[in-house]
Length: 238
Image (cartoon, rainbow, N blue to C red):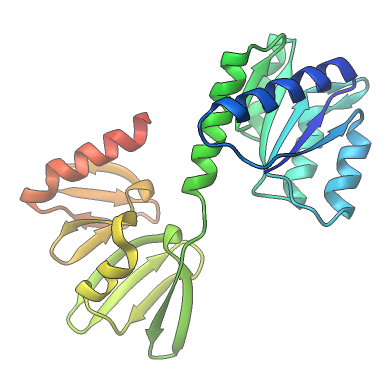
């Protein structure tokens, strides 16, 4: 795992590095760590833009003298959109401002091992859930390779399936429900004999129907309603 720590106080950098090494050793899912340390936002930006290396996590201060860490974070996300930014700050009054870029988490100085452990486990879970898992499907136009995590819904239409995805759009696929079920496994949930949905793409659940992120309304059969409701509540509260 590649981690960046950026703060103008070298003592903060060293303390956080020690704590990250500690939680990695004691969380039960030890990773190989590569920790890059930056005592200025200029060095961090230079690394992000020119090193060719991707960072998984960046711990960065909100304030660097005259520099605004929030603006630096925005520039970082322009270059590496999948990096998770954790702001570290000793000034609680800055917390409201950071939601301009929706940080992954916040650490208030002085941070504790318990709080660092919480952020660490949260990051491991998020990285595991966001892993790309590709499948190849056949359409009339040819073959597509799509990420299962980007699928919003699947509808059976006789000998064809209509698959809605976030990145490719709508695809008409030459497959059966049984064939696609073998490929997606637990990634999607069967809510109706003719539909699979991605529970993470649900925006509203009502009696016997769900509304998805693309505003599609999908029926939920009576036998599957409790399953869908329970999975949705579990997703919202985990």
